[in-house]
Image (tube, rainbow, N blue to C red; front, side, top):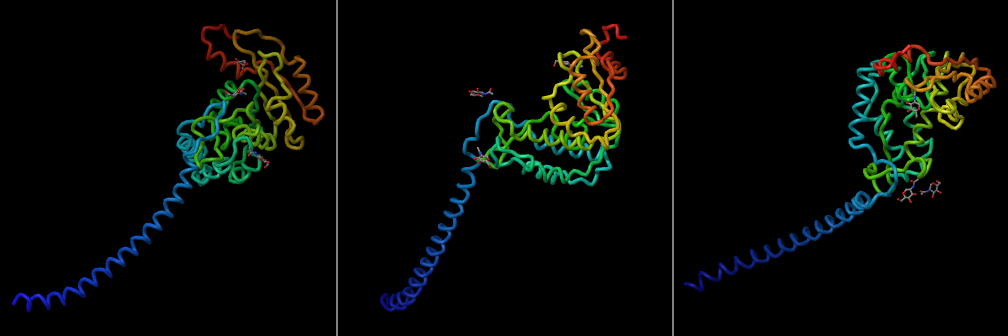
Length: 305
Ligand SMILES: *[C@@H]1O[C@H](CO)[C@@H](O)[C@H](O)[C@H]1NC(C)=O
Ligand SMILES: *[C@@H]1O[C@H](CO)[C@@H](O)[C@H](O)[C@H]1NC(C)=O
Ligand SMILES: *[C@@H]1O[C@H](CO)[C@@H](O)[C@H](O)[C@H]1NC(C)=O
């Protein structure tokens, strides 16, 4: 009875045993295949992460500004949606991606002006004539002025200038990220992402200048006009005499400092000569009054006149 019962069971068992082993074989096959695929995936992932985790190059200047992307994007929406709604259709995410692609994964000493060309091509802002304000060694005061006189533009009041003003940034050849540790300064290498950006923007701003153009200079330093400054070396040479009707210099002195007739300073004469060569009429004002009043507001204890 036991044997009779056993034999059909064992005969039923055998195919079930063979089915099981076939299943195991199939399972093993699929398992091995999955393992191979997983291995391949891990290898690819590792190669990718290796770039992310490998140590970035070290530099002397300040690292990429923390929360760079959030600041950049926030400024873009503020500028295009609130401050200048005529630019309201601007695609800020695209602007940021294009900006970053100028330097991401590149050696931060090898940035070229062409790297920023795609970004410039996305900029549709046109600036009105007679509203350009250039500055040299007087940036703070120039920006205080255009904050009040909002129809005037320094470079940092234009769309792309506004986005990057005061920020630091650079990439690294070993990563897809921005360098969160350090960035090269001008002395490390002149062709770093930030210096090249401002050079390109300054040149473009100067080429666009039209009508009566203002430049604010610092009368409290020895040479208010410096040929090797951004204004002297990059902007002034790019003024188009067919568009710039007049160049007007405002030489501002620090409140409480020595006030002198800086318009007769030798460096201002040099500026006048360059303007003459370009056949751009030039006038110079010591302590242009509307701006002097801003200085006075900030120094209430001083008997401002
Ligand atoms: C910078 O670019 C030049 C020309 O493209 C190349 O010869 C040089 O090796 C690059 N330097 C670095 C550090 O990548
Ligand atoms: C002139 O330059 C000095 C030194 O850099 C600075 O402290 C001062 O604020 C500048 N003055 C103006 C009017 O910009
Ligand atoms: C940058 O730092 C390195 C190492 O600390 C130093 O040798 C070099 O002189 C510094 N360069 C500048 C321009 O400060």
